[in-house]
Image (cartoon, rainbow, N blue to C red; front, side, top):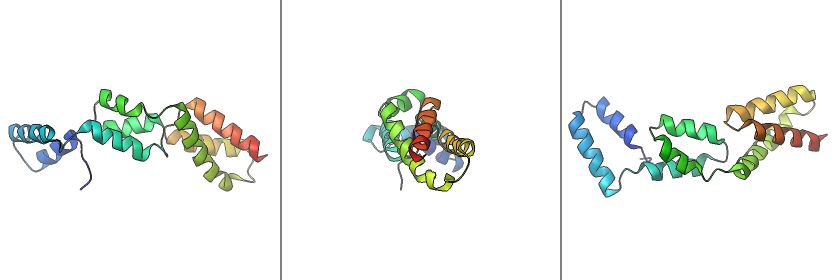
Length: 137
């Protein structure tokens, strides 16, 4: 079974009609013995998904998983500007083949959109796309 956050487990227990006081007690015990660790979950999530996502997208994913903002922010510290540039460059390099032959404006729009949907910041998106298209020309 894949790791889960405390919030995800609480949600599952509620769906199974586990009384709230029992669920809290069980989850507290799970945390006590190390079976549930939101910080470790967030670190692992960021490590495994940072190659294809920007900080904003990762933060949203963690929020949806029930990780609090402070824990998410700590886990996201490893995703610095250089890491995001490199991940964006790799994605653009793969996508460049499919936009060859298109007008520059169309290619830019498609590449910008792809990176923006993946949560990369605007400055990273603009710089990476423009560098890639200039190198291709």
